[in-house]
Length: 392
Image (cartoon, rainbow, N blue to C red; front, side, top):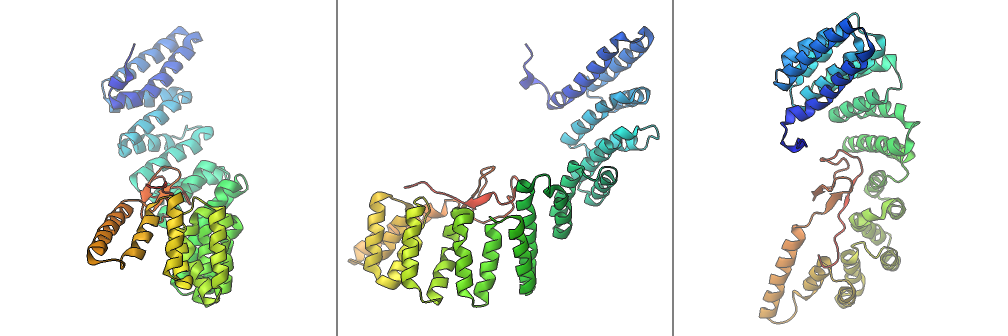
């Protein structure tokens, strides 16, 4: 029995080519003996070169085969993928450029050759050339999902959000649940750019467009709330921020300071404390203790906050809770006790710093920075506040 784990990497990648060519040979078993013999001879010669890692010579053989029978074109596609995966982009480009330059190339294969050459250029970082090829594919097939998806990737890399939106909208009707949130993120990018330029009206327009494509866009809601707060409309900002609970409650802890400020500016301390208490009942797993404790200390005094934290820690010990408890006791007792509490708090702070604040729900990537586009798996909106287990 063959142990595939012991085979060289290039040979493992070549196995699909070998399988394709073998199929081609045996498919011709019913053909005339002369044609079969010629094809088999060329096949084994090319296969021998491939197995001896003489890929250039193998390619020359397979080029001759495709001139005889365009049904062998899959061989070239498989070889091109091998070269791309091995980082030999120049060889992959040579294969596909050779195919596209042939006047005898059947029209039914043209788009696939253009796509493969586009992938080569993407791998080489030549985005302008790849863009041109994917656009050419769309001339022949305006609904080509592969061409549109790759154009979107290019526009994302170039941060050309208007072009990304135009390309993605061609896919929206087919899959609105997947494409809608992506378009929403593009509009959020435009909203952030407009805000940075001081164009509040345009920023609001783009954020509203983002919500039109994805009503659950927490990012768009935060953008609108921030602009409302900047203009002094705290009531509007509060209403917007409270909507996040329905959009995605996991993001509530990261907007609690904004919500507290909105209530404070509107002189709604009692409403704020009631709101926090209700939130904790509805979302027992969310880390809201620190925010709630600070609000209680601000409006009812340190003892009320201390009682609250102590009671919470009895039921559910967490680092946030212990840190808050130590903060309240840092100024109490004699000097030795204060020093001991300070040391404990420093240890807890170190443990908290070692924790990641955010994690991608798709690939597990952890970070202390909120990325709307995961740097690891490149999924939009998959990075969320990290849910730490109790007593972690």
